[in-house]
Structure formats: structure tokens, C-alpha cells
Figure 1: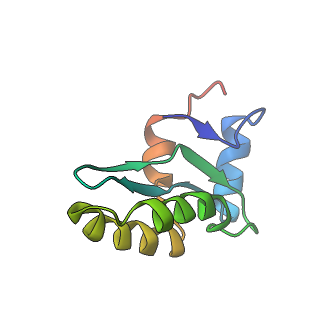
Figure 2: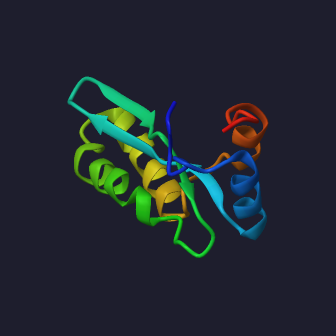
Figure 3: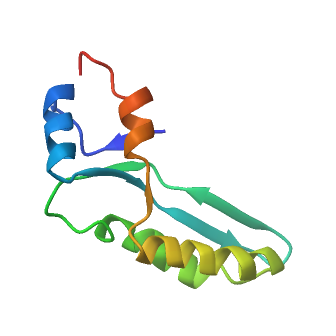
Length: 105
């Protein structure tokens, strides 16, 4: 999974931003057809301190809002995706810092 927003930052810079309130966030989305549904997650976004966490998730919220309802599973998954995105997405900061940021970046 890609991390969007960390280009050019060192691990130390990222850790300082996280201490100031930055987070790594992923946004779920759902797309359905009459007989099939897909629930996936976006790439991981690095949302800096002072920026609103729901902004990067707006596209995924709209995608689910328009395309998510069209099957039985879509009726279940779409509200979950919408609520998560409205709430700011999935905070993956501890997992990303532990696993995905190399010390030399």
C-alpha cells in the first residue's frame, strides 16, 4: 500500500509531525453492482497537523455514497464506509510507524 504525502520527508521529520498531531489515515470505500460488492481501502494518507483528516477522504465518501448501495452487502458496507470517512478514516499511525517507514527515509 502506498503512503501519500511523505515524499522528501525523513523518518525524524515524520515522527516530529506525528508528535505535533499528524496521522496516517486510510479511507474505506464500497462499490456495488446488483450481484456483487467490493469493499476496499484507499492508500494511506499522511495528514499533517493542522489539516483536517476528512478532506482526503471526500472522494472515497462520494464514491461510496453514489456507488455503494446497489446490492445486499452494499446496504451493509456503505453506511460503515460513510461513517468511517466522516469520522476521519482509519488511523493507522502506530502500524505505519512500526512497520512501513524505513529508518533511512
